[in-house]
Image (cartoon, rainbow, N blue to C red; front, side, top):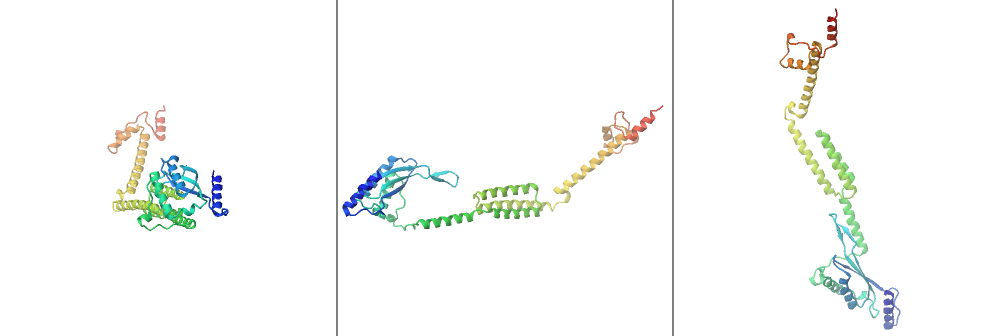
Length: 308
């Protein structure tokens, strides 16, 4: 269809000018039209008719693309619905269609397209007498995107930055005498930031914000530690721990003494505890029990006393 249309229009050009069509003549043009999700090929037919009537071209193919787009900042898919209209680059008389696409003609086409598809038209700079934004050619656009990407990379946190902050925070914990739990929490936070940094999902600003949160916690704990320094030593956490340890040691010694008494006198353990609960008992209060634990010396004495 396209080849036949070109041949017919090339013949018109030769008939009109007496010359053959230049090999460099643009014979194929494409138009890309933004759409909404509900648009169909039937909705595009009036637009195709307008292009053929206004510019004398021939629409040879129309296609809608619904599978393109990008991921938004929140992780949701943002589809780019659009259509491609392929057309012949020569009109019915063999003239160049491209030369008809003046600024005024394109502005009119944009207005007509929005009306046909029921969409909002973009800014009409000519009608509103506004300055047009600078149009970048392919090279300028590529350079601008490279600079944009470079700026984005410079804004992302790097592993070495996180490592340096980790070293500084660990020094603070060491100076304050941080607990194992605090070191573990810091390590987990640093590990999480490094994972995000490797994925290019952590900016320098976000890293500084997380580090600031950790520093605030450190300052708060440091202040709480400073308050305990004004307390008597035996009321501090360390002092109470040492005192408890000493009491447990004393109890162990006390229990050992009572066990020795029970074994030596041959009385039950519970009886010894009962006697010593009210102070040191007299010798008359201690009555041996046959089934009580006894010391080796006491057992020998009892065996000798039982001989005839």
